[in-house]
Length: 222
Image (tube, rainbow, N blue to C red; front, top):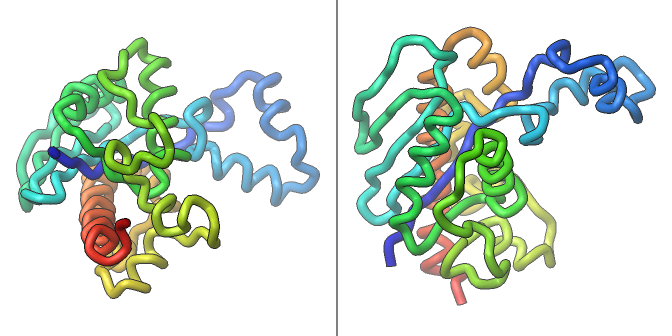
């Protein structure tokens, strides 16, 4: 069965870009300035208040892949690095390319993909009138089609959830966060035009997820 690891990076929209009623709705339950600031900071966690700036795909067997990323409509970028082909485009274009590629694979591997990556991909695709080419959710307990490692490592919610970095270090795997970048920095990187740093960080996330999958597949799959 052909397998593919996927991961996305997202950013929130500028809070001031929302109309006044929407701003009031988003801050409805915030009672302090700190709470308001936190809500504005977390807009990138939701597909209705944020967008996808990178989509990564990695074949765990060949370790070749594709990294589609936004670069704020600047010069078109396309190159290959460490087995990963990088290609820039606007969100609609990278989503169309993603669905074109993903259709060929039998098994999708994610970390928290059922709760974050896939719903985000689906809703942002619908926003741009882009049709998915396959169902990436399906039956939760059928990991042969979508292996969400967070589901597997918590035994479907039976134990506490930890982040990717924590699991990687627990199993002695090189973490994508070891190079000094984590998801909380993606928005700032994008705002300062460091688009390739986001793309390469996403590629490192793919590599870490791949190693975590290989470990799970060898020692915990049953």
